Image (cartoon, rainbow, N blue to C red; front, side):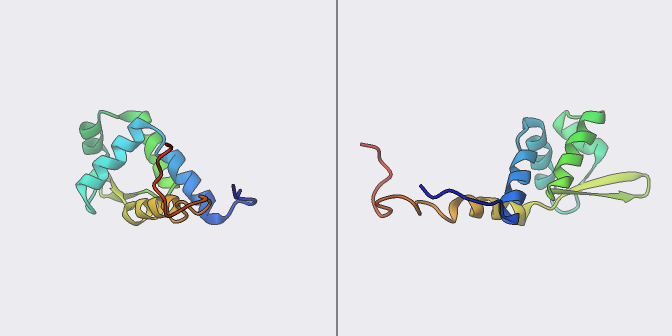
Length: 114
């Protein structure tokens, strides 16, 4: 089986993104923001929709923002959060599937084990 010998920027970015999604609460936060669309939600509305509030929500948003999946912007006295993950999530799926079956002995055969 072919092994990756060095970490590429693409691999590093994918690992960061997948790590950011590795929590049910963060996944719930991102999903709520995706559902809200490009206008996003205030922190209060996001907390109401997900049940994640306070410093826990702040922590999750920080990790999602660091992974490039969420942006935060001050509008007056509110902080609005929005998903910017549409292309990034699609890129993650592509990253996983782009080399599908590349090392299989018979890539044109069924993937059955019997």
